[in-house]
Amino acid sequence: MKKNKQAGIKNNAPKPEAISGKPTPAASGFGSFLSVEEKICLALMVCLLFFVVTVRLNFVSIPFERDEGAYSYYGKLLLHGKIPYKDFYEQKYPGIFYFYAFMIAVFGDTVEGMHKGFIFLNVATIILIFYAARNLFSPIAGIVSATTFAILSLTPFLSGFTVQSEHGVAFFTSLGLLFYSLYNTKGKWLYNFLMGVSFGCAFMVKTSGVFLVLWGGLILIINFFLDKKRSFKDLLAEIGVYSGGVFVFIIILFLIIFAKGSFQEMIFWAYEIPKKYVGKVPLEMGMKFFGYTKDAIVKDHEFFWIHSLLAVVLCLFKSIDYKKKLFGITLLFFSLCTIVPGFYFYGHYWIMTLPGLAMASGLTCYCIITVLQNGFKIKFKGLKYVYLSIFALFVFSHVSAYSEYYFDPNYDTILRAVYGNNPFPEAKEIANYIDKNSKPEDGIVVVGSEPELYFYTKKNSPSRHAYFSAIVDNVPEHHQWQREFVSDVEKAKPRYFIFFNHNLSLLVQPNTDTYVFDWMKVYIDSNYRIAGVVDMIDGQPSVYKWGASALSYRPVSKTLVYIFERRTDR
Image (tube, rainbow, N blue to C red; front, side, top):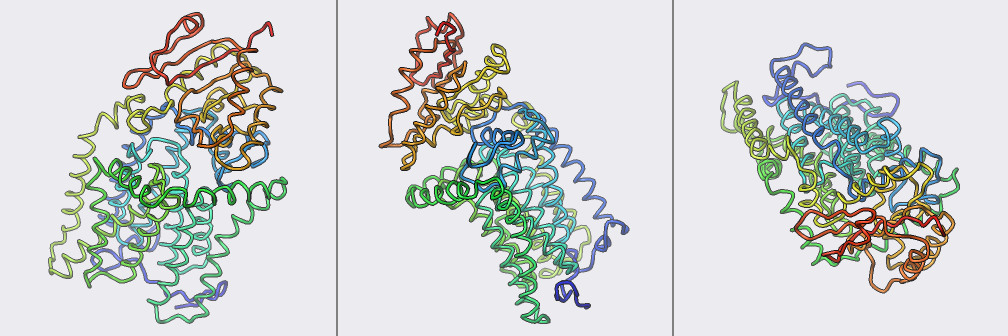
């Protein structure tokens, strides 16, 4: 092997092998002659992508939940020249703002535009998964991995139909896995560097991505000890190149924030505040959250989860290469670690586990066929196609059983099933009313954690505290933030004042200041009149009353949304 002069790393990485242990005809590059297996798998990929695009187009107008609404709104503010952590904030590092700003710049600041953008993102992730698994295992394993990701990434209770930031983490993770597979087969330092860049991007989009960064370093160390031909100097060079890739994007973003003059504010919001949430949920309660979320996510998708996790058992067979065993098991473990911090186990957190789970599915495929061929001496050449056919039958059975969800989704039913009585469908209807009854220069303010309203209406929050829950959280600064919010609203004099009298939206924590609510009662009575009421009756469709009908309406439930309009005589 020749030594890579740029990084001092010996090119001793193994060449890709098919399940039979022989090199695949397409292993030398895209211009190579494609084998029958490769052609079949590429044809199946086209069918898979057509299915995914068709299904996701059916969700193109589904309303946002509050997190995706907030991130989209912050991305728009960034494009309008606002300064992160000063003009708006989030308990994340700045990668999330630039990621959403990019999506909005390319696909537009509408619900439909964002969903279409994430269709491209999801398709790209599936393709990356396919080629990563194909390079590491075989083309058959590649299509199995890609299909597993495609189906599981549509899981409703995992927020698969959303534009959540975790879809971005899954994309960058899959990109890192592809570069790892190329580095593993070709040994070029550039692929190692780009793997680091990819995992660094995942970390900047969502802090939990740090576990993928750690995995990238670990797998390089594992491979070093499994390859006896390299020196310790090679390992140091390898880790150095990888670390350089991880930190280059992080340093660039930090320098941008520093240049904008909000570096200290970033440390406060992205580091100091999240520290207060660690350990807030007891382990016992966290395990209950885990069990509830896991059951909801795995239900109706048992085959795909079992098939992926079966790789852990199959790795016990001696005929499986140690490098592949440790790759699959460690990736799966670190992927699952991404959902652990804080013990909240929210459904959308699980999206970050899917690239690891998909690669484990490809490993299961590889292990089963390898064990049958090498362990049980089955020489039938069509064995891999039999396996693929059985897998396809399970996929077809699943899609047929849940065809209504995939091809004729009811948005309100899905949002209620996934998010309970959260006012996400209601927020979209309220935005529609405001759009029809306001001018572009008319402002709004939302008391409730529904920043998606600002994105829907293309109107900015009068305060940097667009996510209301922050100013009713039990942190010392919340007293000051409430008074800042009040001052901002009084200066802006917004035309519409939307109040979510809803526990899940207000998210008021125990022992917090009531100043903002005391002020609101007086301020609304003095300056606003009722323009609309939304009565969220449990187990029934919400009742919407506008104008004169809202004045005389007598609510049935205690969960209400009030839309107030500023009086012109005050």
